[in-house]
Amino acid sequence: MRRIPRLPAIDGELGWYETSPLTGRWTGNRLKGTQTFDVLIIGAGFTGLSIAGRLAELWPERRIALVDALGVGQGTSGRNAGFIIDLPHNLDANADPEVDKHIHRLNRFAISRLDQIRQHHRIDCAWHKAGKYLAAHEPANLRHLDSFTRTLDTLGAPYEVFEDSQLQQRLGTGYYRKAVYTPDNILINPAALAQGLALALPDNVTLFDNSPVTGVAYGKPHRARFLGGEINATTLVLSANSFGEEFGLFRQRLVPVFTYASLTGPMGETQVRRGFPDVAPWGLTSAHPAGTTVRLTPDRRIFVRNSFSFDATLRARPQDLQRAWRQHRASFTARFPDLHELNFEYTWGGMLRMTLNHQSVFQRPADNLYALCGMNGVGLAKGTYLGYYLAEWMAGRDSDDLDFIRRHNQPRWVPPEPLRSLGARLRLCYEAGKAAGEV
Ligand SMILES: Cc1cc2nc3c(=O)[nH]c(=O)nc-3n(C[C@H](O)[C@H](O)[C@H](O)COP(=O)(O)OP(=O)(O)OC[C@H]3O[C@@H](n4cnc5c(N)ncnc54)[C@H](O)[C@@H]3O)c2cc1C
Image (cartoon, rainbow, N blue to C red; front, side, top):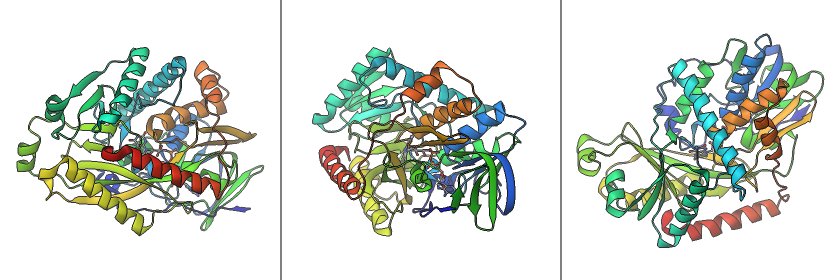
């Protein structure tokens, strides 16, 4: 049996999880004893949840196990900025507008699938169609906004441009010079949505959370080892994203990059009245990829995400969290100088599993063995649609979308250590320097 050397951990104080209305409601059990299933899915983030949900619809008579090392909502899926993005800044970094159009369609499909499940099961996850601002502070970065509007024009996607005082009125901060607003982005508490999706899974899916897979043997059946238990399954699906390489199915495709987030406590009435009169909740990403993501949440908290670090141990160290907190504080103060009394209640880290060409691992390494990992920074929409179509592939359902996905998910080779670490650190340093005031 192959040992799984590195396991997910709680990296800091998980703000969305701790403020989710669903935390504390039962979702799963620890795996104990030996159990047999038709399908075992490892990883209950948005990707694993989507695979499980669609597979259960396609194979109602088969027994499916979905397992996670942490509680649902505690992994990266519950630690992100909560943007379900229809139009990412660079889509998948494509020069071909037809490819961009197809990805935009798939993102919209993911949003509508999540919305249907959310409405049907009344998932309380602060879902709101707030749109998204792509904003620039530095004059040098205005050109990124122009290139984004050119892409939007080619796609025929709606947008508005806001500048200076008009932008300040909409955001409650005068920090940004200009922004491109696209209306169809969704904002959520991501931990709450993940928990709600887990609760909504059909009856033929059994969820085991807080159950790390510590060993795996591929064969007939596949075997996964847990503390005090084992699962035997005919088909195994790996959706462990950042930890995907630990399972030895594919190598040299992913780059683990930590990024960090903080969430303030809710603002008081006076702070809202003074700084945010008539300002609706909003979400903003930066014109520069290494810049800061900011949100004003419906419960009047401010969310800040920035700072990157590369760590092959796949853990955020206390000093990384401390450094991120300092940077978050500086970015927050630059944008909201009047809110100096508003503290961060939570600061945490999470991993973006990057691939060099933004494409994901979407593979069948052997019969009855599938891998879907490497969602880059857009896994809410991407993990949902790729998970859905992986299930369709497993069930033998062909479609143009599946064909497109298989052709356009071929991640490029990444050099081995120590070159990977060196290259990643140099690149992160270079990008942070260029982002300047966008951080
Ligand atoms: C701070 C931050 C902000 C981000 N903002 C956004 C955003 O606004 N929008 C967006 O779309 N994306 C965002 N992302 C990226 C997004 O969070 C990821 O793309 C997404 O979580 C990928 O989902 P997933 O299900 O593939 O992987 P994950 O969420 O990583 O799920 C994989 C699961 O596998 C489990 N696992 C791993 N190893 C084992 C094991 N041995 N045994 C059992 N279980 C295991 C993990 O516990 C984990 O829960 C952000 C990421 C970060 C860190």
